[in-house]
Length: 168
Image (tube, rainbow, N blue to C red; front, side, top):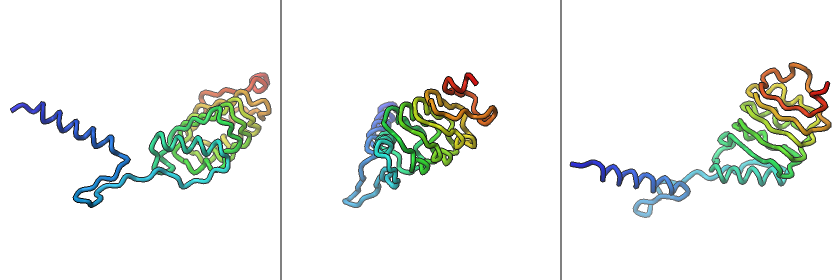
């Protein structure tokens, strides 16, 4: 007896069910499955950062803060990172070309591996010194940056700094 048609039909049924991940399933008018709601329990005062986070949560179907692993909020008009620290699962963060100055909130992102802060208004990089997983950091285009001391970013393998830091 050929198993091909039966196997194909089973695969088709599974694929159809997977596409319905956002719907309740009922059997005999009784709900047997309800998908988890998207994560919304966070407060971020900066409107631009909040909008970027909401879009990423929707796109990636994030149901818990720790599930958000990558965030790209470049060219978004962000001035404050307050509240971002609740997303402790972020390992890749792109914040290029914003108006960010204070990095204190980033110290809470202990799994952060890649951070792009080029073309912002960053002055003090000290909150980044203790990030244990950070290996790629771009701080270029921050004209007021207090240049990190030699060896301050020991774990960082790929480091981009503004011209005034490379000259000293």
